[in-house]
Amino acid sequence: MAMAIKELQPQPTSPVQSCWRKIVTPLPVPASVPLIERLRAAEPVSTSGMPPILWHEAEGFLVRDPFGNQWIDLTSGIVVANTGHAHPSIRAAIHRAADKPLLATYSFPSKERLLLLEKLASLAPLPDAKAILFSSGTEANECAIMLMRRHGQRISPDKVGILSFEGCYHGRTLGAGLSSGTSQPTDWIQRERVKHFQIPFPLGPLCPWGCSRDTPCDESCFDRCIDELAQRDIRPEDIAGIIVEPVPGWATYPMPAAYASALSAWARENDILVCFDEVQSGCGRSGRFFAFEHVGIVPDLITLGKGLSSSLPVSAVLGPRSLMDQPAPGDMSSTHGGNPLCAAAALANLAVIEDENLVEASDRTGRLVLEEVKQLQQEFPQHMLSVHGRGLFISVHFTRPESGKPDTALADAIVHEAVRRGVLMFVTGRGFLKISPPLNIEPEAVLEAIGVIRGCFLELKDQPA
Image 1 (cartoon, helix red, strand yellow):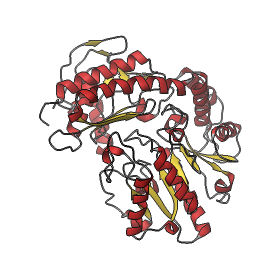
Image 2: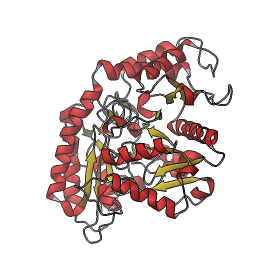
Image 3: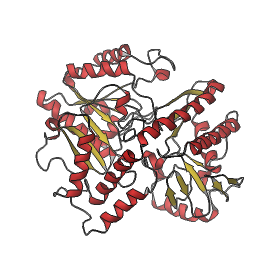
Image 4: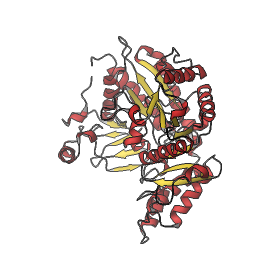
């Protein structure tokens, strides 16, 4: 495989010059290496997994370093910049807010927080909706888990379990981390000892009951999940809520409608709440404002973040008054929730999504991208387990032809080689590429980027790991 430029050994590159891409130096840039080394000395190793390019400017769908290089960005930061990096309207809103002598308010009343809360409540397809603001998606998901457990305790002291799905991601704090399911076990605490339970996400190619790439999971798959829970002595009476990404960040594949319908019916029948985590997939990312619009059911709680502001840290939980008013004053708040600058950024961001029709643009451009990538899959099915996506939320899953296991080496090598050619992606370390550019990306630019990915794949696919 091509050498990963993360090793901090500058390597020559071929010059790149297009309308959107420009590579004029070795990578990593020799002059950037001392600064990156200083970062690595100051930060934990866990922060060093991305390609070592020094971000200097990011505007729209372009990222630049201070040395003359420019990349088409397929990351949106980390699925943050839905309206593009440094959108002029968002920057102007932040400037106006920063010019006022009011930089923090906690939970004291403020007009800035009010306007964002009212906007969010108007967007939520929930009865009598309220919202609360936080700083990060993981914080919002922790709040949602707490609300679901409080709901369960009203019914029975033992009804506090949280059901989640393997592969989904909800954050890194305790409850959110326990609800996240990755390929690595949680080795510092056992989920089920604290009443967190997991079932497989209904992704056909990985279905444990025999569904396939072309056969979506249905209600029978959900019924089998419930049967397996019963075999583990986990009953509906033990479960307060379900948290799931309606279009998971790793699979970018919506929960199939029949499966979702069965889940919803089972939850209602057993007084179990459903929370859809829209931190990555929301705010137009999936070609709908809320990704659960693809799924066909409306949840009890919604969490938002990342693309809610396309910039500053802000997240939210949306739910009906009956749930949101459970905690007493002081029992559910956040030091920086509703920060005036963050609220201004989020309000401006929501206005841009609406004014520039970015939900429709995400759907339209995403269809073009998905068609291009699926053509590659059709040419090389032995190397690709699956290609999925809704809107500009697309993933390409590679597999080793000889074993059928995820080809992590190939996927990561493509990322590093694409960076050398002017296309920026992030390393997943799980055998797939994630294509999530800003929603306002020019269609020609993202198709050019897919062409670069294709070239990298063709060059690397047969090289030894």
